[in-house]
Image (cartoon, rainbow, N blue to C red; front, side):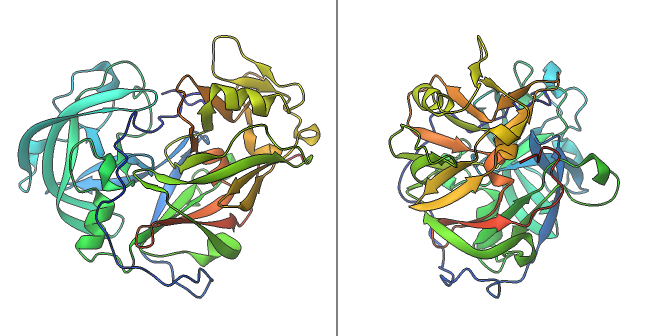
Length: 379
């Protein structure tokens, strides 16, 4: 995957979508700022607004890896020492023989994401995520990473935060382990993503932040609003429609939307993408791609309001107009050839809203992000 918004990793293809998995205790349905104090915070690095990654440790002694924390999948994998694919070069590789606490599971796994695939070996070891230590955590070590999706990227693997029914490894995901090993106070996690800021490089300012088991009230304004999960696979919520700040409603039917921290853009079916861009001035399809070009000057472009569970969430034009690296700009709304009505709502939306993934109540919370520096803000 290149450092370009055109190449998000995306979510697993054709996931299982059963209605039930593990269940956990509920937390109070109040969502106000006195509700929880932040705990178990993990800083993330912003990779040019394409993805966000943070560090984990596996094994004894520990081996360190940077991973994307992805609510659109449920498996954990890192590059393995036995991988000979060109995409594995340049990454730290997990060496099972170097860990005294490693246990092989004697089976393989394979995962196909929206833009890439891989396969490898399944094992168990102890793991540290921020200040949380997990015992006997199942994970994968890649042995084959075909193509160039994972070549030259700054992360060494992906840590899935979706429901366990999505797991290609048939394993308990790390977030479930945190809950069942009583490492966090509440069965939830929260995510904050800041826009890329070159002025913050080397300053110690995080590009993003995860809070495991709690909510950080300093990262959003007002109150949280909630949407129930309608299918326990992805963090999938009801999308009633899309409205432009010009007052125009996009001519699309109600959909469902996976709230996905591992995808850069908002991805939808080809007909839906065409319908939205028909309302955007000077939007033109880029031949041979699922992308549209749009003007870089956002002052003449509308904001877009997502109607989720009958509540409005607006992102300004500066959020969905993305620089293409050559002086032109592209739309953050992309199409897929898949006829599925499920939308994938990624980082162009999540940079505007603090999100809480509440497994106890099977719901997603949204709070307007505390705004800071925004390099594209002209409107």
